[in-house]
Amino acid sequence: MQELTGLRFKRLLLTGAAGALGRMLRPRMKRYCETLRVSDLAAMDPAGEGEEVVIAPLEDEAAMYDLLDGVDAVLHFGGVSIEKPFSTVLPANIVGAYNLYEAARRRGTKRIIFASSNHVTGFYGQDETIKAHVVPRPDTFYGLSKAFGENLAQFYFDRHGLETVSIRIGSCLPEPVDRRQLSSWLSHDDMERLLVAALTAPIVGHSIVYGASDNRTTWWDNSQGKHVGYRPQDTSEPWRAAVEAKQGPVDTTRPEVRFQGGGFVVLGPFAFAGQPGAEAA
Ligand code: NAI
Ligand code: 15L
Image (tube, rainbow, N blue to C red):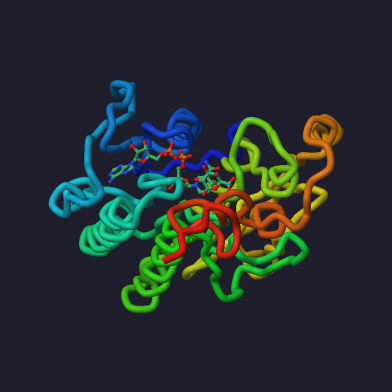
């Protein structure tokens, strides 16, 4: 994808840089800043020109304070990215998000782009189209932690004027691979477009935008985030026929087909009430 503007931040921070999206975004976001600081708790590629590589666990308050030094804006992609026991989600996504916001406030960082998730609203139906300001209906402890992150963002804006765009990312992959992803897919190029829009929109306060491409089937209406200026240019349509042929007919009574969160709604120890595998307690 061509560079979108000649825009240059002095220093951007990308957390979660060792992860799937972090590795994809690192070379792309480098083009928009003089210095890209990348962090994770896992090992990352060594620093290239104009890069700084920092190992920093989100739950380490002092490390986060150091990490935010001199940072204009943050792309916060670090943390637990799938359903896990609450004791695993808590330090990374809840304590970690607090540490990041508090460090950003004290260091004077202006804006955070928060990699939230569609699993904040995973228990809405696939027969519904929802806007960003609906009541959250998280489908997992993971989705709950992202809802906390969004509330934290709202609080830090209302209380301290620290701006955030929370992106409820759908499924960000090179291409859609199943029927659900025909609706939830976000191409890598559209992710970059969305991040640049979120970084550069003049005023965002705390805004929430669903991160999806311009798919023909969609459950998300981004009209409440129009001011962010995101214009997707890709669509899942070229993959539709092949995905539908491969998958065949779906059983629409199954919870993972009924709800937007797909397979996440049946993950974890509780499974889904009334379904085989659901824990009695
Ligand atoms: P990933 O699991 O590949 O990457 C997450 C990174 O965060 C990993 O490198 C991991 O080491 C790091 N991390 C985990 N706990 C940490 C901690 N306590 N301190 C510091 N670093 C920690 O996930 P992926 O797919 O790259 O997603 C990135 C972000 O985007 C996540 O926050 C995820 O929830 C969100 N997201 C991703 C979607 C997707 O389609 N890939 C969809 C919706 C949201
Ligand atoms: C997410 O939040 C996950 O991080 C990612 O691994 C995908 O499963 C995605 O949602 C999805 O809903 O497809």
